[in-house]
Image (cartoon, rainbow, N blue to C red):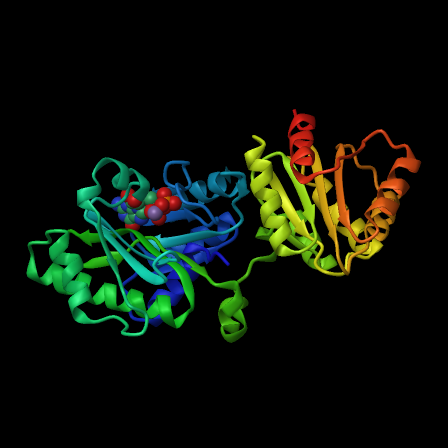
Length: 380
Ligand code: GDP
Ligand code: MN
């Protein structure tokens, strides 16, 4: 689960990290009142689950409450990377001398948290990694040993921080960020930029935190931070219907039964030259109603140009799935072509049912590979 900047900063403050003082605002009038209360120059910041807000015009400095209100009016009407801005964070402006970057991600390959630190902050970290990899300090932390002061020193000396007081502050920030990361079961904690102010103090000017969904049961107050309106409509519908649904960004909707089969179906679509738009896992049961629900969710995604339905009948019976497909086509209008591959229990019966229905947007294929190729072809 991704958190908004202001939510991430709330967690940061709990662990003692230095952040600016701020207020949440949902209307221009609230933004004005917040600026009035904070006093002095403020920054009006769009709250969306995306980076690059500054470049998109979603971060603006205001020297008066009136100007804060005007910026709020403009930013609340914006979309950033397709996400509507509905919340603003109004923060007392910091006087920036330098912008650094500090993050901890979960390195799944190494099975360890990974620190990344560079004095070339403010820009996207991928750019630093590509252009000046030597400027990026990377450091794993053994999760069983936890964070030790030497980790902090390895980061600051590695990045060539000359000033002792600055080094101490960064080392403390790194220790605190590690506490946030492990204490909140985060998969990402990123501060970009971590700034040094003109008076030499460190402030986390931005906060990007993602928390492992599987750990939310033990972080009630973080789970409560979820913004239901920020979840895409299809994902909300899927959750309501109890369908496992994951949004991707290609053009082929993928449906299968069982996580392993679905994963290999995604690989096959890629091997056939296509890109999956999303996928649904019917799980082990795959009764007719489950098929109807899943098809409804998959086909509602406007990016889907063809659907690839891949079923291996075990406990799931292919004839039952075929009935579900036919029922779905009767109940809802599905414009996209549907390629179906059945194998296993009652596969022949399932194929017969589909053939008898004589529907022109149903395309049965005998093997997974042929079905994947067909779906890619039909997606154009
Ligand atoms: P992002 O673009 O989504 O990563 O949003 P950030 O929160 O990182 O803000 C983008 C940029 O706005 C930062 O890199 C800063 O240069 C600038 N900015 C943000 N807050 C302040 C502030 O308090 N004072 C000043 N002078 N600039 C700020
Ligand atoms: Mn940022």
